[in-house]
Length: 309
Image (cartoon, rainbow, N blue to C red; front, top):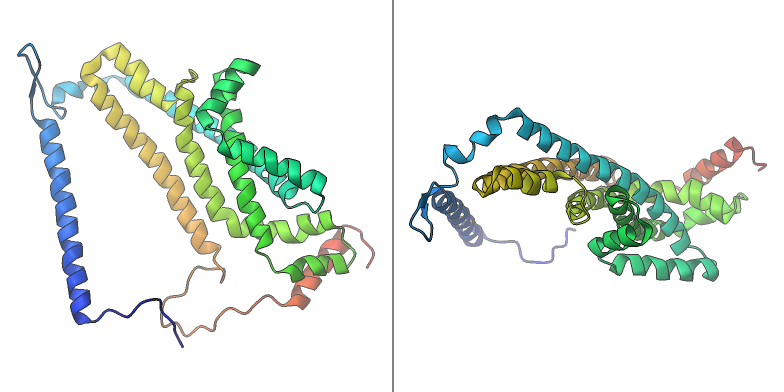
């Protein structure tokens, strides 16, 4: 029997929902068209001079210069470089936080919890400034360290939640065959928790990529600083909106690509291994994990490492 949290809508409710949806879409499209038209209208300045609209060709001819695109490309590469290094370090820090936070030893768990909550509550920009001013690391490593520590704390909590969500029988199976608690955590629990929480981890890495723009404040020459500051200062305020629009488009392309990757992985790492089955599928529901299979997998992991059963 299928249970629902609300009554199934009837024909009138479905028709009303379609009308509201169509009306909402039309309203949003009309608002966007109006915005584009208003931005394209010429504007009179305080001294009476008329400035061309933001879509006028005279505001976009700067992009015929190859050096402009080279500068934007260098900024984008710097952004990706900072995001890649910070993402790798954030994963390492997140794994360490997850093991310390889930430790059964209070002397390890309590200090880890305090440090993790401190880093989670500290603004990323303030952390960048603190690292730059106190440790004199330079703008790149100040941004990398702040992003790695903050996002590592978030990823660590996600991994800890994934470990806690696993059936207790999996840990008991590892301990029953003689694996130590640490070996059980590394060989049995952590790989499954990492796979389950991978979509959330990738979503957090999308946030990390966007937060690289905060390195603008500490002087790192990333995409935002290269486009919206350096180029605008060089070519003048006439092209400020044009550079803003192109930088926004590049950020959207990078972030949407990572978001698409997160959705693909979320479908592939579902509970049935291949995403949610469509309604009405005749395939049998997925069965719970077989304890004997878990035991044999753990046994194989121990025998591979040279353990004695």
